Amino acid sequence: MPDVLISNWLYLVTAAGTTIYLSAGSIALSTALGLGAALLKVFGGAPLRFMVEVYIYVVRGVPLLILLFTMYFVLPYSGVDLPSRLGGVLVIGLYFGAFMTEVFRAAIAALPRSQWDAARSLGMRRPLLLSMIILPQALRLAAPSFVNTCMMLVKATSIVSFIGVWELTLAGREVVERTLAPFQIFGGVALIYFCICFSLAQYARRLERRLAHGQ
View 1 (cartoon, one colour):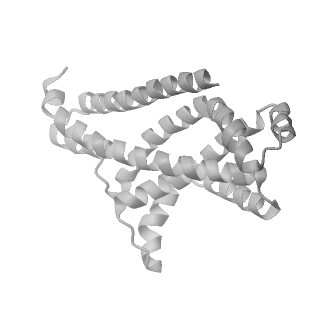
View 2 (cartoon, helix red, strand yellow):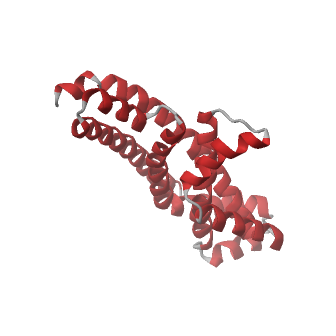
């Protein structure tokens, strides 16, 4: 490994801590938002389903960078001035929540109709039906797509560098400006992103096996 990368490795790893913080907060928010919106889309009335559809198509049809710039530059004019890190988590979570909605909705829709009918024949009400029958199976089915979306989210956190949030990509650019060694530094940055995503994928694989065993 080149000396320039070794001498700046700790700086990059420290910045990766911010990337992990942004990723964890955004994953938690997008998961909660996506699961809630998916349930509304499947079980909600027509007005709620329409609202979810509008949210999905509007958010997925607008680039993430535009949403981020709107939060950072437009909201302050309306009296809402969010810290950059918090704003980044909210925008990324909101953006990927639309994708998570479709992940969970598709998993719920993929369950055999017999599962619903059998639960209803036992007299299960909807909350018990969801918690005991539908969601455990849907989460297992959603696991591969969910993990893939989470890994895309981790890499998308690099975009917050455009609003001055110090994270891994911005730290890499700072080091390149000092050392003029883009191939070595960005190679190290890519390796750190790979390690984060690989660890996430391995954890998800173990979780998927546990869910399958629980079935």
